[in-house]
Image 1 (cartoon, rainbow, N blue to C red):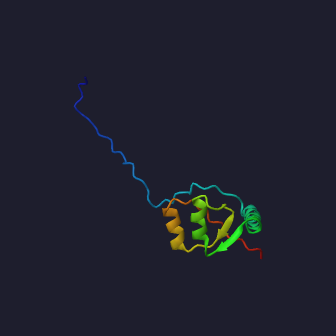
Image 2: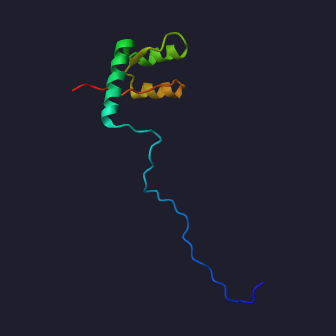
Image 3: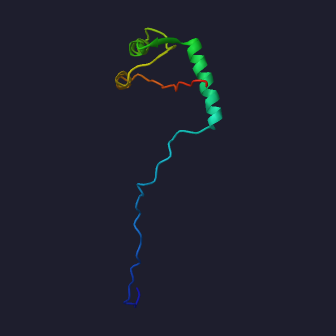
Length: 101
């Protein structure tokens, strides 16, 4: 107990999130020149060892997902087909096409 009747309340700043700050992605980074080398090798490997199914990618992806064909193919589905495949739980990975200049 205290005999003092003077009680002060300190002003405190509330914890406010700054929504203007951009969040860093969870991805990791490499130097650009290294990334170009990696993409170049990846593209060469895919085009050498995988079958190009072109616009039939969605159809072939469904077959592969059901175990009715191997997964060594690539192609170019439309955005709509890509979204449908993802909605069906089919795991996809977009490989950036790297062209040597």
